[in-house]
Length: 89
Image 1 (cartoon, rainbow, N blue to C red):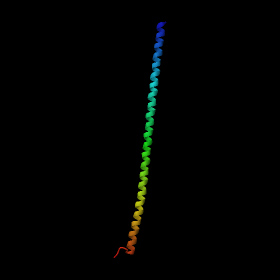
Image 2: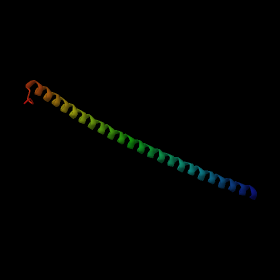
Image 3: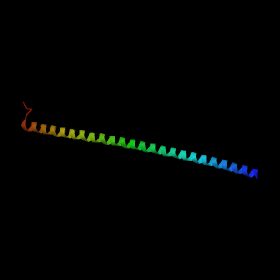
Image 4: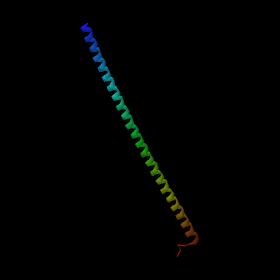
């Protein structure tokens, strides 16, 4: 009977070890979730960089618009000077 009780206590001890391993698995799992959250943060950073690229691109469009207006003014000025002979001495 004493041997059966000892084996039973050993089984309980092994069972406790299994619970401890199980808790470790949960801890690893939470670490995976944390890594996952970090990946989401990196992803949001990529979206922010993307937004910055869009802002730069809008700035380029604004600069292009300015260059186009300058081009139109230059063409208008050249056309005007040719029709009025403004630069002829």
